[in-house]
Amino acid sequence: MDPGAKELLDHDYPSTLESVDQAESEILKAAGEVGFDEDEQHRIGMAVRECMVNAVVHGNRYNRNKHVHVNVAAAGERFTIRIADQGEGFEMEKIPDPLQDNNLLRHSGRGLFLMGAFMDEIQVQKTSPQGTEVTLVKIVGPRN
Amino acid sequence: MSVKLTTRQVGDVTVIDISGRITLGEGSSTLRDSLRELTAKGNKKILLNLSDVSYIDSSGIGELVSGFTSVSKADGTLKLLGLTKRVKDLLQITKLYTVFDVHEDEAHAIRSFAS
Image (cartoon, rainbow over all chains, first blue to last red; front, side, top):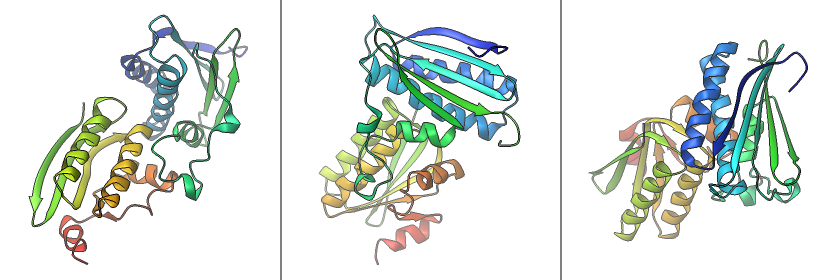
């Protein structure tokens, strides 16, 4: 957590689709308290949903023995969401660009792109001993 | 709110009125099953009415794309009707807005299948 940040949520969710709805709902509540308007909350919710689905489905593969750790904090104008799974990870470079003409009609592969489109910053990093942590940042204020 | 699909026939066009959320799980699988069933029955003109769809995630987009390609492969046509601003934005961001034939007026959409 960033120095001086106010922690709004810190929770481990089981690897289920119900957790996706629950995390989205709880993070949207926090986003509303920070002051994001309805449209911005919708974008944050979309990004969170995509990230949680990746963590539950592709990361932890619905493994009930693995959890998804979610931390939400606000520091100044920065609203930061960290979502970490315990999966095997993935190579960013191997994910096809969903906007390329030959990928437009692919069934899947748009999740990370949408997170980037709806948030101001996105960072993906491997965690030790295994897992992936995605950090999503939305700026409160003029960019809203 | 989960997704709800209602199918009706307007001439030779099958209109699917969809309401709720098309997201991973029940929402996207319900749409997939419905389109597969219609295609298997030989319906070649399908109009998806999305005017009451409040939310689509990437899984839902995937089902729209899969539906579009599977209907096209069966020599049929799938078109979209009544996008909300958020769904329209989503299709524009993903560059899919120009892939689909999108209409705002149902009568106009129905007529367009004849051309």
